[in-house]
Length: 243
Image (cartoon, rainbow, N blue to C red; front, side, top):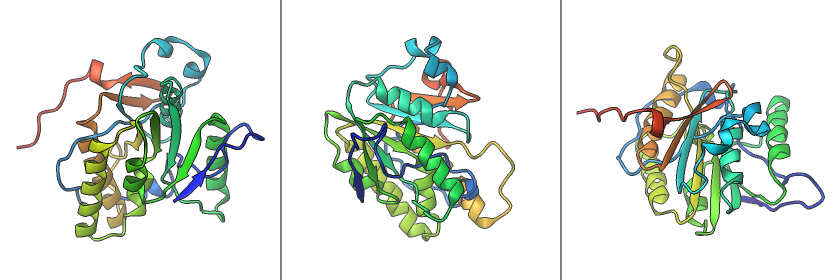
């Protein structure tokens, strides 16, 4: 795990963050996650309206202990999650699950955009696939902003089913015990056609199953599409569990 402390000489902490996985992480999905521990929060939109004030300012509950912010790529979910975290009044720890990929110029540009957006007071943990241990170390006065669940799933995509099930159970158990407030960013990857490759299907299936479990344990659940954040707890009804 890499810990990146705020750098007072810049506008944002140095170190990588995990932006919306498009070309790589949105690639694939497969076996369903096992166990049914408590769910967690979803990610939020990158909307210009939020930055400008607008109606969004009155909507979010900054005291929600668990928030899941989900949405398609490029819709603004990371920005909305950052908006929720900034309004919490807590010390924010940005938990990045994405790879560094120093040789990928496009990925580096994405990372830099995220770095520039983050306040200088936020600290950053680069955890890659080791998300559960990082969350276990957070304290009650902190807020962990996890960006994102999709890149965490991608880190374990090649693991066999038995290992994947263990990783999911470990993460879900840690989320249920975590002392800090949490905002989790997740990708909605099931709106298109069924992936043509085995890896793509595995990614879609694993991420979708994991986020459904996490959502059940959240105080707030947001869907971010086209730069607009929708409060699913207020607007929607829970789908009955599969029998």
